[in-house]
Length: 515
Length: 117
Image 1 (cartoon, rainbow over the protein chains, first blue to last red):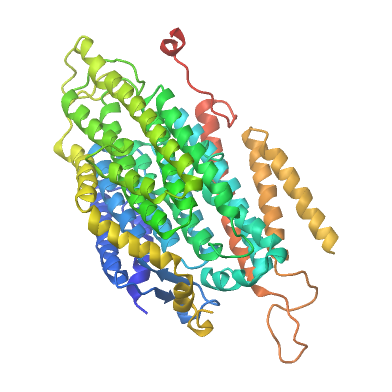
Image 2 (tube, each protein chain N blue to C red; image 1 turned 30 degrees about the vertical axis):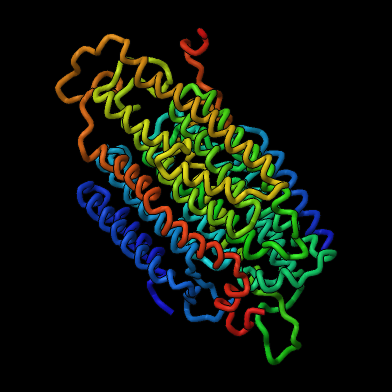
């Protein structure tokens, strides 16, 4: 039992109160500490990936209570990859927030940021569904604070909608857990995975209800049709670095579907056989269409990016919905890719929008460094839309390749390919309005010396520190494409491990012998 | 007793859902509070309903006992929903003061430029 496994939860939990109570009046100290904490988390998560790479499922028993009685954290390849994804994204976003001064626009940014990381890492590591609920609440309550960071009329109202939506989701989660507990008497994932296949199909009505309720809850998080409607308003009105961090929040929902609906209600379970994919697959197809048309129809930049996030979640969940190891491998690769692509888009959009009169997709006076921003936007959009040479192309190729079964191929290929085309058209329209048509408008009068024009619009050049996180995210996408072979190999082993239910049960419940 | 508990949960859920669909902050907060009461009772009853039994095994009495785990779960759920309601009240107060309006629905912002096309 290695104590490293709990560090991704403990580290942010220790630093967050320190940042909130001790350092709230000293922004420099808070920044240094926050960067230090996130870098530490990044180092730990790299270590965890190496620890999980040998294929064993590590379990951390809190208080050394044996599972299923105690609460356990479980580290396998999937958890390790997700924690690494979280911490590397968080590091980029934090650098951007500090460089652009977003963190100064309201108190407690850094404390909330750490609490958010604690919740996300905990959700990825936990081996207990009730604990998953608790970590969901931790990450949500931090996200409420981050969402309304720096305030403003529209942001507060969008934040309120987001909170109400998620509170309703949490209530559903509890109903699902109650139903699950009433029918099985346990909430430990491994124990559930051992008990639920033993329930015959005709007695599994309650289990089916619980499985569907859980799926709705995770679908709310993953922005799956028909419960995706909260996402555009939330992401478009959140501060841009926060929206970039939220790129991982939708993946928490996708991860939960992968974990629970593969290990617990996975293929071959008589009670829920064929029920999950029958609903998940069409919903994901509609999600792709919705995202693509949203991108095409958006009038402002931030909602446009939000809709592209919805589209990418659709692509991801189409691959998840067939529940085969090959498709899950593709889904995982696309998950890593789309997290960085969405974050990169939000970071670039932040640089542009703060130098422009609002984010409306209409020609305005061109910003300073128009060429640089246009190039960054172009790169990020190539990644998001899935064009070569960045990793989005390979991700979509993997997804398409894994969906060759005749009954899913027609729908999946049509939706993904047509969706990509519409997304490209939408992005091209947005980019030409933002960067090309704007050059036809008379150049602005020289701004005041401090670089801030009327209405807080910046007129100074972006510093290298402000541009660096977006460039780094692009570089990671390029790296993901260059090293696609080794990455896909690791993720293939990850998917195989995820589908090895007996191995998971045996690792967590040694006494049960994995039966 | 089963009938009483079940109908209580049903009534509270129905009231909660109705209030939540009102799209004004105050009814929505009340609705979410009602829903969380309903879910707490539901969770409590998920460990089977029993009267006059301790949540631990005792060697001095018979072997029946009430399931302690749902009680622990309910405790966690109560704490969380209480905290969340407090946050919700603060955020809705903030949104109301900013917007002078307590509707939850967000109307799309249509500028003159957009409506001209």
